[in-house]
Structure formats: C-alpha cells, structure tokens
View (cartoon, rainbow, N blue to C red):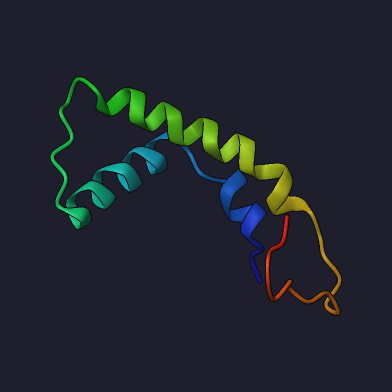
Length: 70
C-alpha cells in the first residue's frame, strides 16, 4: 500500500502542472497562462513544506481532539 508521503515525494513537476490545470477546470477557474508557472511552483513548494508532516508516523491508538481550545 502506498502511503501519502510516498505519493507526494514521487510527484513530478509535470504531474503537479497537470493537477493545477485539472483542478482549475474542475473549479471553473480561468488560470491565465502567464501565471500558471508560478501557481505550479507554489504547489511544488507546498508539497516540500507538507512532506515532513506527511512523513510523521502516528500510532494507531491516537485519537483526534474533539474540540480545539487554544
């Protein structure tokens, strides 16, 4: 079985670009061609930022908090 961090680490820039294009279509957004490279770059950066969180293994016994209280 593929874990989320394995999937994220295997994404190529072309796959990220396809994701951005398809998601924009799905949401009905018109993404101008001149900004698309920057959007793709931001998603590549977001993946890099999220990778450590996705790689964190939690025990099966952990439960989410029912209410957030700062």
